[in-house]
Every structure is written in C-alpha cells, then in structure tokens.
Length: 120
Image (cartoon, rainbow, N blue to C red):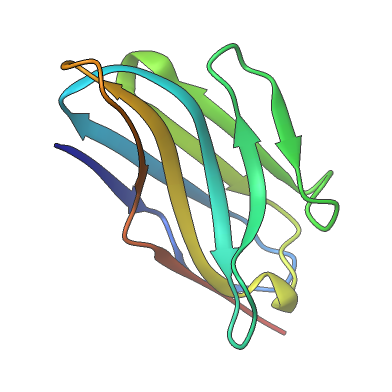
C-alpha cells in the first residue's frame, strides 16, 4: 500500500504565495514521475506541473514563471511553490506519483487533494 498526503493549501490574496507538499509513504521501492494537477470548479482536472526522478520538469503554460515544482527523493516528497497567485488559480490541487512497490508492481497513486483559494 502506498499513501500520498498533501499539505499546504489555504486562502491567500492575489499576488501571494503558497507552498504545497506531498509526501509518499508505504511499500515504496522507487518513485518515477511525480506531479501536481488541479481541478477548478466546473472545469476538468488539468496538469499543473510534473517532475521526473532525474529532475526534469514540465509546466502548464498558465503557470510557467510563477510555479515551481521540486522533489526530495530521500523523503519521497514533491513540492509545488506557487507565487504570484491569481484568482483563476483557485482549485483543489492533487499530487500523484508513479510508484514501483517493494513487490515490483507499478502503480499510479493520488493524494486526497488540498484546496487553494485565491481572493481578488
């Protein structure tokens, strides 16, 4: 079993910053890609940023230059630094991870989500 637990969401004014964390725990042999997605009210879930085990990253165009994804492989944790937040960034943010478990099985796991609300 693998669990992902997110933290760091909250209410912030436009222009402000937040830092989200997502820690993976359980029967983990290795983690390949990790990522952050978000779902805004009335919209489909979208990729925000991803990071591979080697450190390469990718971002949605809407967040480039404002958000930064990073990871600590020793802690099985991925972070998302959100700067210059806009009201349109309001959403539930979810992390995911491609995990190879100790039994050799591969799985894609999701966190429970953390709410980010940006007021204008």
